[in-house]
Structures are given as structure tokens and as C-alpha cells.
Image (cartoon, rainbow, N blue to C red; front, side, top):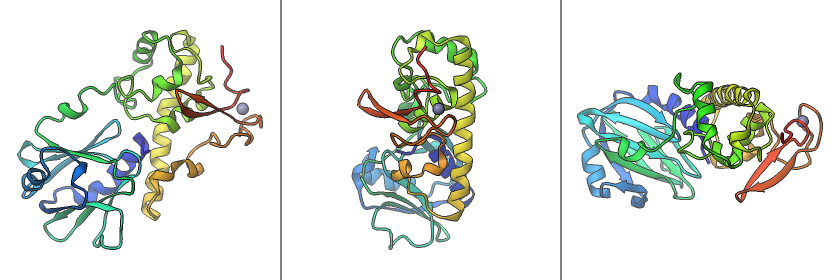
Length: 271
Ligand SMILES: [Zn+2]
């Protein structure tokens, strides 16, 4: 599933190509992706609007349009967005946004789980998300205070979108590996040093992955649905038995709340 780095890299990649463009039409091959308003109103309200700003909140891509309209897109499991002159060859193209001048933005989504909203107030969609992990306000102290309220394991908390926005299963593992914290460690029992390492890891892992994804987007289209195969983005091997890159101990895989969790039993000890 695309996480913060994927959505941020897509945003940075498509922004220069669609900023300032005016919608001339929308082709909906999968109208059920439109959560609100109706598919017909979605199309009619978009036409004539200009894209004034691109933003991201958690895993949501936000396009602020003229006239106070906001187009919000969630890529879910397999979605991707590309700007290209021709979409006919893409059999997974579910939505094509047409712009005056011929530019097209294609929302491809093999599994048809992606979602779109056209709203006046973006908080109706993203208002309940936790803080942005890369914002200046997300300090080590803020993280420490939020951790104190939870006595469950740290791993599921990291991908809980109301705790902090944008992190999913894969980057939760990567961040905990970078921080040297066992995924089952209790959130409210992390030491001051562990919280500091966790905060630093969040701030290192997410921008590093964004940068690497951005470089690759310039070269070819990243299969976001197959991120687990994109081992080049991650330091922690997502294969049980592979040697840890730091200490060569075999990586272990355990289920935590039914999600596959990878970690190094030597570098990430439970305190
Ligand atoms: Zn290790």
C-alpha cells in the first residue's frame, strides 16, 4: 500500500506537470471510486476548475482548486497517478482527468480500492488524522506525550492514522529497525533514549524513502502495489531468514494484529 513516501513522491512528481491546469473533463471508468458527491456531480463540478495547490495529508493527496473546491485522492492498495499524453494502453486506468491543452492525469488502480472526494472543506475527509510526522510541530516531546497514552505494542500504534499520519505496515517496520526498538515493546514503557531514537528514525526513514522514490519516478513507473519487492528502498530485509544488514542475525517474521512484522531479534531487543 502506498504510504507517506509514495504519496509525497507522486505529489512532487506530478505537481509541476498539472499545477495551474484547468480541468476540461473527467472520464470515470470506475465511478464507485467517487465517495462524494455523486459521480455526475463530481465530474460537472470539476470542469472549469484550476489546480492552485497540491498538498499531502497522511496518505491522502490533496488538490486545492479554484472556487474553494478540494479534490482528495487516496491510492489505497494499488493506486498510482501519472501524467501522460496517452492512457489507452493502461488497462488499469480507472479515472482520467483531462485538462485544457491536452494534458491528462491518469489514476490507475488494479484492485479498484482507491477513493476520491470533491469537497469544500477538506477536514470532512482528513480532519481526524493524527499529526504529520515531518511537521516542525511533531517534536520529540509531542511524540513522547502521545506514546504515554498507550499501553499496547508500539508497532500497530505507528500505523494507526489517528496516532500519526502517513505511516503504514512497511515503514513502521523500517522505522523500528532504524530505531533499534522491538515491535512488541509497550508504547508507554519506551525509555527516553528509545523515544529519541524513534523520533530520529521517523525523520530519517520517511524523507530518505521519498527521495529514492522520487528519483525512480523520473526513470520509470514504480509498481507501488509491489512495494515489498522494492527492497532497494528499505534497509530491513522483508524476508524471514535473510541476514540483518547490521549484525547478520537472521531476520524474523511474526504476526502482530495479523500484519506480517519483520525485525532483527538481536538489534531490536525487547526491554
Ligand atoms: Zn541485527
